[in-house]
Image (cartoon, rainbow, N blue to C red; front, side, top):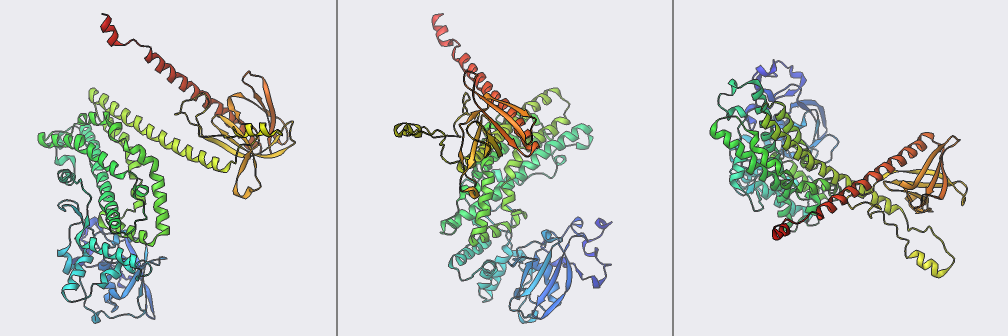
Length: 625
């Protein structure tokens, strides 16, 4: 079994002709655990140095090993100095930073090594800097004990630069590592960015205020497992052990999630804030990129420090089991504590879109993003991946609580867990409702942008025409008739049909079906732009009588009733696609049901408010008594 082998012995029996190279253990930053070495986790390397194009070799993709360490022996046996070549990920034009790139994420990928000047340089021509020689000067990449600065995982670069400075070497190599990645190295803005990023690699990123050292210390002093907290854990009943495992899952994932949020605030946001203070990347809107991520971080810190940590500390002091009952007050206040999530979840997709846009438009932003994402604390996550974490986390609390409840026997605790789950579900549903309403509003605005001015009623009298035009304002964002503001219309269906009535023979139309109305439009002359003008008055869905006719092509007979329930309009809608027309009939029925429900909800809400307003005041009762 491979796990039973020592790391250095895993590939002893591999034929030398297979070119499988294992980086020497002494060259690694950390000694690898046995489970971290696998014959299936390696990447291929090919060489295009000078006129030589050599066969591929395979190098282990090991956690804790930098690309420079992994390639050192591969290049050395060919007499190639790694500082005189560029290393590319297959099909990419940007060189990889070999000192800061971990090989663990390169498994299964292909690496191409090319000479910077197309000539292989013997290693003997330049002094070789071993990573092991400077590893003692690396700063910790963790948060604990750092004070007020975020230190990057690429401080080996800084150490190499410092070593070069002490021996009289130029510091240009440090700049070239980053400026060489992105376009023109002579760009003054890029040079300024490179200088600042290299400075952050050496000394850390100056942090924003409001750091809570005690809280951070607690976050980084978490035990490996609940059994390290609870005495005699093995003697507990199986179901209690399963419950404790579920409680620990909530604690452990909460800490990991807060760490991820801290990476955003202390790495991405702090780095950008400091760069903008130096007049770099000032065109980047931090609010559009991160929304209210700092409020999200504060919410989870509050939840951790006020409810989760006290539960953990109580168990640490008593050495007894973790008591989820102590979380009840926190989940009762769940909506209050996590209110910032409503705003963040509604804006998260726009943040990702803004990140994509800036990444595609700005070379400086791309350089900033790549530098941040290659730091060790980022754990190989991209900012795009991290931005979606809050939405994923807020929906996970209910699942974690249900897992605890599944293994809980005490009735009172099960009842408390029911309350917690209910509070979480209510809040998550409200967030989903807000998100859905925002999406519906965006769709509605997109439709509005395609519809030109309402111009249905015509008149030959100038005065009458002026009066009519003063009311030609169709506002699709206004509340639905008979509904409160919280009941918003949304688009159910749109498509091309043919209409026939007493005014026109068959005419091509484009119809929009909303929650409360059917809108019949006609394409303008600018059809390629997808713009339409309103052809008929808006038809309130509750007044539509729709009947399918057995005709070819498939046809719907539509009668529109007035307020007095008598016909005031009639027309035929047809389509060569029978299935599509049936879909229109079913969706009109669906719209009628949705609109009726919205009106009923508004009426019920009004009655409740009226009943409350009619209740006698206790103050006046006391006065009369």
